[in-house]
Image 1: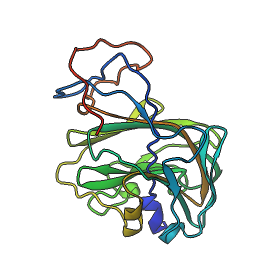
Image 2: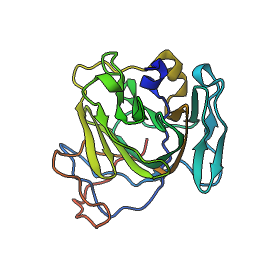
Image 3: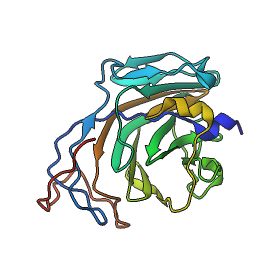
Amino acid sequence: MLRLSIVGTALLTITIFATTSFSLAAEESTATDAKWRTLFDGKTLDGWVAERRYDFARAGKVTVRDGAITIGQGQPGSCVRLTGKFPSDNYEIELKARRVKGDDFFCGMTFPVGDGALTLICGGWNGEVVGLSCLDGEPASENETANLITFKRNRWYDIRLRTAGGKVQVWIDGKQIIDLTLGTYETSLWFEKETVLPLAIATWRTEGQVKDIRVRRVAGPVSSKPAPDESKPQPSDGKKPVDWF
């Protein structure tokens, strides 16, 4: 397994500020979740830049096509990173991603977690591994967050990640696949990935696309109960929303 695969960096925080009239169920929350905020306008790469250092020196072309960021197939990796501010904790990010060409990860999202950082790998290690790199130095394929999912080419997948209250939670197509309590885990990135913070999305020998990316501040982690159906209005507790940054 290629070393870079385990860190598949690139967190794409393309956030869409959509007004929400509900609050997400959370543990020990002191305020409701904030409104969504967009990080990608669907037309240009304003606020984003293609990374060309280290493993991305021979990256594929990064363009905007059909309302999505297309991250071309690199040799070995390609990456686009956010140039603006991004929260370090207590936030949630959503996006749609798909694999267009290749057989490795099509969405390697590098994101901050408090004073550290992690990478969410989607489709690594022969195209099926989903997990977080690195925990106590162990890559996504070798720690407790590892999952196997068969991803179909050219199919869009809804990816949702939430970090708050000492937890990292991940859903794909509405199904929760990671509910990690950080505890004493040491989070880390390979040094090549540290240059893409605060947020980036990468691919590995693969062409991928991302779109509909949005982010918001949140009050806390989601409880262990099933996540609410966000397509339906939820009751508000009347608490003041948290500030964005």
